[in-house]
Image (cartoon, rainbow over all chains, first blue to last red; front, side, top):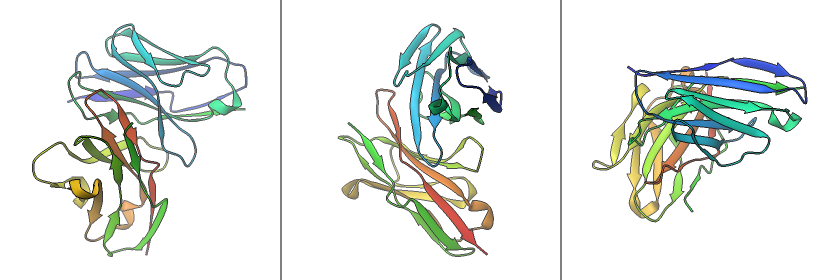
Length: 112
Length: 112
């Protein structure tokens, strides 16, 4: 069966510091990968998605970036965090030709 | 562009009572439709999905949803709510272009 792992689960970072959230998927090959952000009390906003290694589509880049160095690894980064980056970040995956998206457990980011 | 509307931000029901969460979508063709549930501080779990065929779909945890094309709706129902159903519920719509949109969510509170 397929599993998705996301870490760290909780992160408190000062303004201006860098960010790295990592996500890996197991049990499948060539998945589509996604990063979503969920602000407090709000719905989900798609940040990035990837259909293959090195292929990243950006929906709302802001000061964030994403990379896919390996088939089943997806990384969300920032060089300098802003207060407005605080929120709940969710990694997700779907089969390459599939329509159902499956989510990781999420990472809480607090920028102070 | 496609969109998803969940008209109810917050719903409170008594334990054992029936539940219906509303979802309306805007899309030119029949989309792929989903309901997810999110417990506090956790990722989203897929409850059920509709792609085609029987318009009444059964999901996990005793939930069901009915697709009504004429009303552009995909409402989620449960005959008898349990206290453990308290969570946030998200309706989602996906087209053929890898574009998935989420509603803003409905928070369910269950009274003892």
